[in-house]
Image 1 (cartoon, helix red, strand yellow):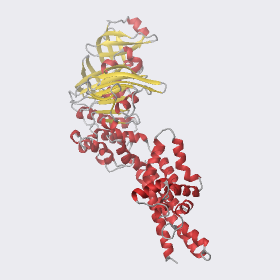
Image 2 (image 1 turned 120 degrees about the vertical axis):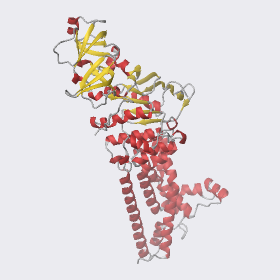
Image 3 (image 1 turned 60 degrees about the vertical axis):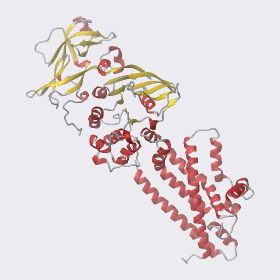
Image 4 (image 1 turned 180 degrees about the vertical axis):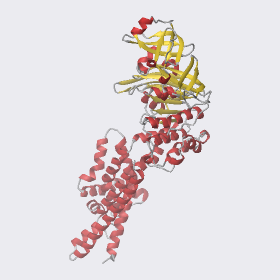
Length: 230
Length: 378
């Protein structure tokens, strides 16, 4: 019962890889967007904010299809990536990571933006008077002070990536060993006659994974809070 | 690099409040910006530090131009090399006291690091605090760390924005000797913002009177405190003369200390100071009475002959008289009726009567080079 089948191991490994890569790659972009939204006023800010939050409100299939149009071999960005770097995104695990990252992006940005808005800008001003330039201040003062929010954003995005289904199956299909993550494998089993037992095992596995991730974030958050409590 | 210690000519609109000042300070030492809350003192300091951008003007330190709207110069705060001690301390909560202290030190140019960590730890008595976090510190300790952090950035000028305002009296007494020490021992010019006359009298060499976004006067402390026209700004109840004195003797039997100043001798309750120690004290106008002849059989210990130099022209039952005691000035607040009966006018010869107990003990400031006694607050 505790042994994982080859199919389960494959799906679990793929899911973890997709989720970790999507979070790591979107982290710097998320920080950048959160900073711009929290600290800058500019024309079209509402539009940018809307675009960032779009994946949260449109059906995931729409996002998947848009990604396919944009990043498919024939798409404007996908064609460029293939011609210049030889990278294929559509129908590969990289595409699954992109889909997961895009879908999780609003959650990540939200958490980071909220924590950034709570950072006392007077501390940043104090750091400037002590000889630190804007980037130095961001790294040594702003980032550490918003780290609970970065952590929360990363965990949320990780959990969201693990569960990504609609955009993934639309953009990169359901290819065993390449793009068949846990939810997709579960979907396949449900569609297969006699797959109920296997489906149940995947359900349990998914629940377990989510619980571990939440528990880890709770422990980390508590540790951070303890060291900064002011 | 030469030029006035500080040139601050700025205009700034902040909503319906406007700041328009033109200050040039030639002398170094401690420059105090004095004014009520909301007079614009903090905005002035923020503009000096580069945290607030003036609409127009020029800011220069010892000839170093930090801001000049005409030449489009606006040096960013991190390159102005000004230490800033904020009212609320603003320590970094995620760093230890040691890391807070060295934050500015690490970023100061290597060849300008005259002040080191050990020296500051010793000067401000921070040894026991180094491993702690800011949230474990008391209010007074926080301000000492903030002071040390600003000093360790090895600034060309130290800005202190009401550093004592958030502290109670015992904590203030704990910090004040440290401020005196760094003014005297480190010889860094200091701009000190406050609305408390006691702090000015104790610390300041030069006073800048700020009111409603304008500078009303700039000059040596004793000059401004003796000007009748500035009295509405220096405060009615607060009005008094600042006197530089030296300890001339102690009367062990009656527990008195005798002070020598330009206008004569003063006897005050015993002070823990060695002979020759220099100090500054303030005598409030309401604590001085006047007599035409030296009174006999009086409880007043201090009777000082002088001449009326000025009479405040204000209507009302009270009148302030400015006295010349042969070099030193003193104020007396008496009733219009007394003035009328004594026929006091400019040039009248009088005797000022000062009760020994009236000397404002909180406003006793000690000066550099005087035999310093250890007085470390608590």
